[in-house]
Length: 135
Image 1: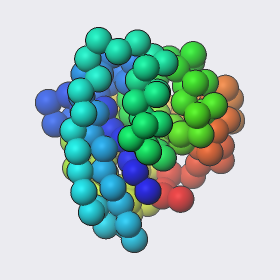
Image 2 (image 1 turned 120 degrees about the vertical axis):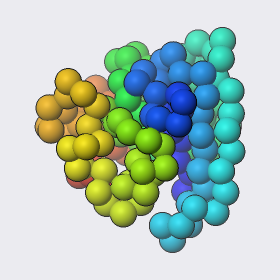
Image 3 (image 1 turned 60 degrees about the vertical axis):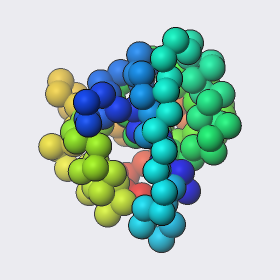
Image 4 (image 1 turned 180 degrees about the horizontal axis):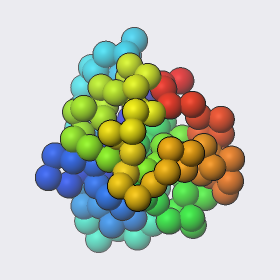
């Protein structure tokens, strides 16, 4: 599985649509096997999604994401887990250990049910029914 995380100064970027860097982490049996940083500068939404598809990203852990871009991600079969906040390594560890639903990883201003509503609404990719842990 490959996990994509937009990064800003060591933290999850607050908005995927405008992130300049993406961390791609290969994971096998809940263990990181490789990581790669990729530039996203000057790329509009559809090109960002195409880059994630080319990199083989299965899951995107991100802050906010626009509805149009979330729809393109879902259509590309990339699971989106939005409204994530915190230091990248802590967020990755929490995801791998089923603890991402903890309030400290929720983006400021979001309520605890925001992720569930996102998954049931317009982002009906593999994220539909996400419960806060790894697949």
